Image (cartoon, rainbow, N blue to C red):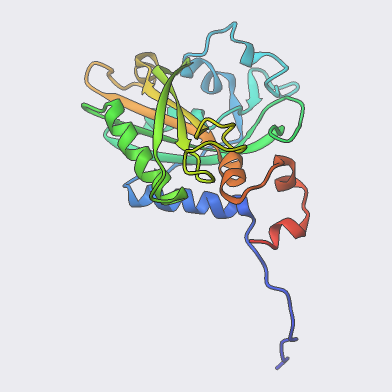
Length: 247
């Protein structure tokens, strides 16, 4: 029997892994099931089935990685295709949360990377409303950032939801009074959301006259940066153990 050497350093979960685990656990407590999908996706599921117009700029090479010599196939630009696959195979009511890596063809800087993680949620049932969405996200952010956290809705546009909204959370650094983190506004933008567009429901085989749904999604990397005060997203992918060992 070999005696373990004393003073060995202890391993650490990466902060991205930790936050993904926290998010999944919280939504599991709220009755959500985890769904996953492929990182290589057909154009139909990445765009068409999500009501994204053929001339939408997100389809251009500047935003999307298209696979060479494989027709109409991309590295997924968001985790939303998983929602369509799930709706095609399952009957409502259901609640799912979707963690996963996505890819965008853009320049890297302190807040942008060509690869990053997203977390999405989808609820489809009868009589679902924005009020239910607000209730779910308020509970989620209170569990993730603390009981004093509040959220607000702002109108926005996404092709796959109508109406579309942006979700802001109260700044947990200054408690909403205004600071450099929230740019003196008291709130921080964290994700997009809205009521699932009828075209998306109908296209997946769900009768939009009977069922409604809400969806939400945001970057896990941004949640990590906010939660732990990390000011450059590139640090999360640098492989520098000085970062990981803090957690």
